[in-house]
Length: 471
Ligand SMILES: [Zn+2]
Ligand SMILES: [Zn+2]
Ligand SMILES: [Zn+2]
Image (tube, rainbow, N blue to C red; front, side, top):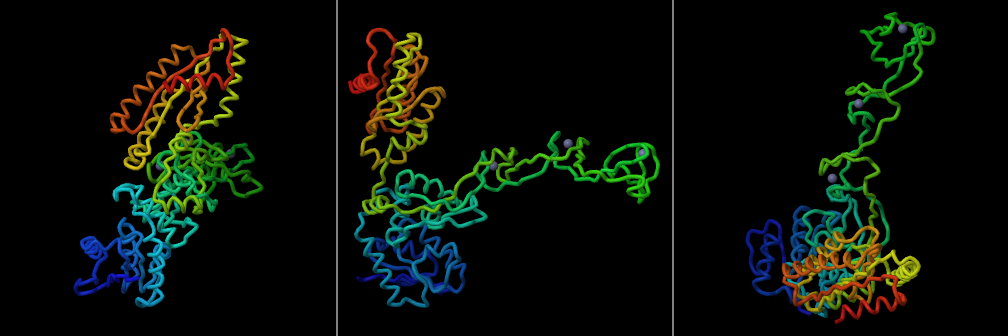
């Protein structure tokens, strides 16, 4: 295998052939010569670690070179070690073999099908990076300037995140897509408002919330019985009782110090336990400690299915799976079970009427390959529309990967009609807005139980609703 050697040399006096002074120059030239798809390697000849760090970041961040073999003569900082393929003083046989191995994997892959500007493209690159380097586990590292206090360097850089820690969302999404499983490694505490981890824990006055509180010794004057904070007794270097103005001389004889309490300088209240309050250093919001969001920090393990996704180059867009997570959907069988209970109930108490709203949603394969981001945005909006229109007592499920079912308890047909129409109108607007009318099929219908005549089984009831939706 012929492998082009691209050298990036710190302090090189000029750029010529495949020798460059800066990684950006190398990228521009490779792009001009259309060399990205043919076997090549980058060798960073640095004098300083800073230069290696920067070059590695620039090369890995660029979608066109994020899978290229990269070597260096110097070790980068620890957090970038996993992004470099080897460290040697010069391009040795060993490095060439490593590069060849990587290219053997890369050349077998279908070209990344997603446009270079799409997050899907970067996510696919990330998976292919793991695949071609035989990395099975992506581990979190502590990082003080990450949004969440941890980050996954390979993901943060290849996924082009402007802030470390933001790759977390992508990793969780790919976990839901079964590309990864996870293994708990740590925990973090996040602001419930902005999601940052930079939280400051403060002791405050329980009455007025001020931070101007002091732990003080209290003095008990025996002869008059007065008890107060030591500061009230202090006059110069003497202790004078503020109540009876007698001087206190001997501890144990005139007075004792029975307790310690907090005093608030602001509102003067006295208390034994201060409250705890959290201040977010990012958004300045203040909240009690129980509102802190505790989150698990995982290592992500590349599944066999994930490797298949990387090989085939296509993300599964499991529409219903994403909807399920976001809507808090219950399984279809439990739904039938509950529906059955409602049907039995309406038979005994005809006034307990209810309806089931059915939404048919078919996302064409073409939508997923040509406009995955639009589809995701649409789904996100759809979730919001559904949430706006259901009550907390409504029960949501889905079936056969094309229907969303919503059981509306204590609802008359007129009520169901209003909800159905409102959702349909909104969805139509959203489809138009996103230019998805030809790519996503949507239909709504509803069926109500009134307790009159023969009461169907849950299966029969749902079958009728499905028939309506397929008309
Ligand atoms: Zn106070
Ligand atoms: Zn006194
Ligand atoms: Zn915050």
